[in-house]
Length: 146
Image (cartoon, rainbow, N blue to C red; front, side, top):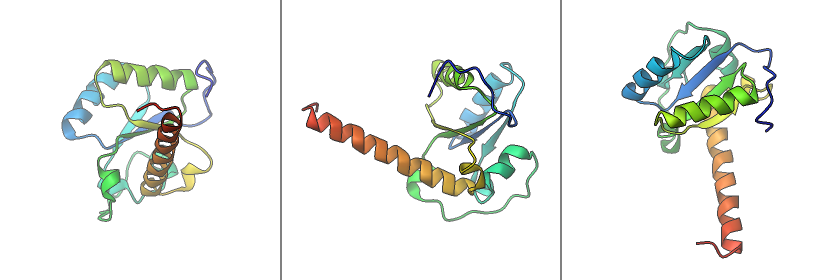
């Protein structure tokens, strides 16, 4: 990822957050409201069955109930970013970290993930994250790093 890339994709400027409790949501809302004009949405269990593109492109939803959330997904912090340059994403991630917010896994809106249901995207991100962690652990073990 070119962190200096200032080119914004031609997508709505929106952030989808998942996995934050009510207190964290309030603090993030208070923090983001003052930064810049873009939309954000906290995705909860009632929105997990929606396609990613619908969550990015719309602001009103008829809530549904999604009851089959895997345990590993429930505790996951996640942020899907749309319409931001790589540099803006990096800056936003740093700002959130500096404010003490739990660091989320981050993805950008792509042609592939926009077609997925949000729950399926979370599962895929979790799977990819675990794969990367296992490769890092394997590399450390091969180098004798405990």
